Image 1: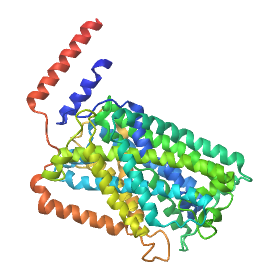
Image 2 (image 1 turned 90 degrees about the horizontal axis):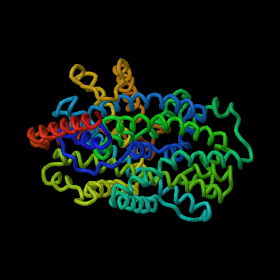
Image 3 (image 1 turned 180 degrees about the vertical axis):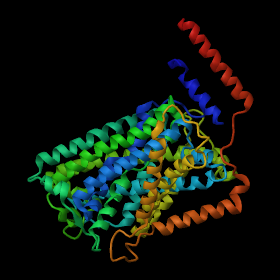
Image 4 (image 1 turned 60 degrees about the horizontal axis):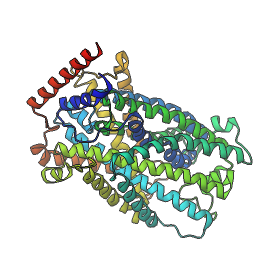
Length: 522
């Protein structure tokens, strides 16, 4: 189909899934890819989690773990991309679950995706706040940083990201273009500066073979397993391309490619970023327990690496790059989350009154402003945990990871089992490798689910206990009870909002347009 009819093709495919075109379809591949690439954010992943990797397994475990988890994440992305090509809709994972596993189960699965997205927004806000206060402490070591101050700044960050998401699609497009460039060029600048200015450089033996175990337990093997969480926490959010598919041209191919390419590019760029930082380390002890002033690490410990390698002023400049990339990540997370909630409300997933309120887009900009600010508001409530408990925040972060990974694997599992003989693949597919890649993805997520619930530091206390298993259990019980006691009465899964007559008219117009284009070409 010619370029001038591509939008009609997108609308027709969406209508076949039962939905009308309600967003502006202005995103190209770079914007769709940019939302997932920014959501993954190697800058925030490597920048905030490197100290964890050095404690659990050391540099060698970080390097080889990154390679292994990249391959596993690519399998998950490929399996998701195949389903996305068949169902390119903003509902994404929950819509796929409903279609492949039956309407009975899709609504329950949606809560995992929703909880994961909300937890992800809150985590980004706190990460940016920690980076800002790290820069403050460089020049004012006596500043009394407390977690409630981080929570306040995180709330400001979330509100500002919400504002940017409320202007128009063009602003979001420009931000995603900038974010893609920043996530590619920023790590390169950081690595070049650190390697060029570092007084000494680590050896290849240190980077590729050095193991550490600072977890408080004796098993090096278990410490290496825990180190897999470093890249696993990074490779999250690539379902975002599906959530903005109704705003993407040629979404039946571009959204799927956005999912897959965001993981592949992140894997390669993140690996080079990680290697460069490891070669630039001057002292692991400085990163894990350095100022302020010798009383403990900065809120974001990577700034110690920058200062040791390049000095205070340059170190703060490099941290500013990390802050900018992380802020773009926050914008992308809210973008994806708002579309997912909009689709959920469209299918009355929040109940009658709330769904009717949230199922609305601005008449001029076509942006889902109510779900943008509903997501921001709920994330602020989660962030308020930070006024009293860093343990609660860590648990919320783990729930975000578990929620998203659970949501990722359910559609693939149902495609491989319940819909094995009924799934109709789209233009992007894995051919004969579909089943094996799908099962690898499912098994990896099941393994990761267990790993995410295990204690990470010993001896286990009330402060460092991993509450993720408790919280995800609470989410599961709440979802099940909500479904059994009430939601099953009114939530029947995806709602058809295009009549058979309307769809037939669209099909007829598409055929006439194809025919006229054929005559014109002849």
